[in-house]
Length: 175
Image (cartoon, rainbow, N blue to C red; front, side, top):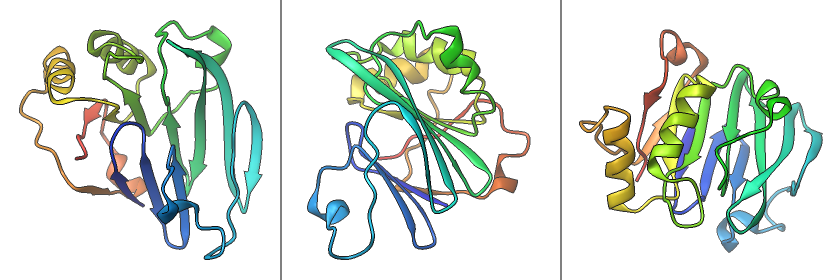
């Protein structure tokens, strides 16, 4: 699995020919003539080609938000999107059990504050935490809250299930 980040909430997760594009609005990822695409919008349960997706309702600071939980190649990916309220409903938290990779907004403007993001990410107990929707100052605040100021950004993350062994809340910053 290769994970890349394009800013704000735009994340691309690729495993072989399978590409998951979260909040991608560019022609590069939405060209329906290239390959068979399927768009998932909003709460519900979806199954596409052996990939299981749950969309869970949550609150953004400017309206509704959907949290996506995806099982891909035996790894659980949780994408919090533009989450603005760190107080998730207990039924939502129970459906997010066993998170391997957590994408969490840490930007503060319209999404969680760095402090809220750090507290929520710890409570969800993921193996890996990847901050999204950030600016330099909010990312620094998040990393300081997490005690991870020395984390160096990388262009992409290549990940296999075995790489998750022994990881508990490791922060990886994608640029």
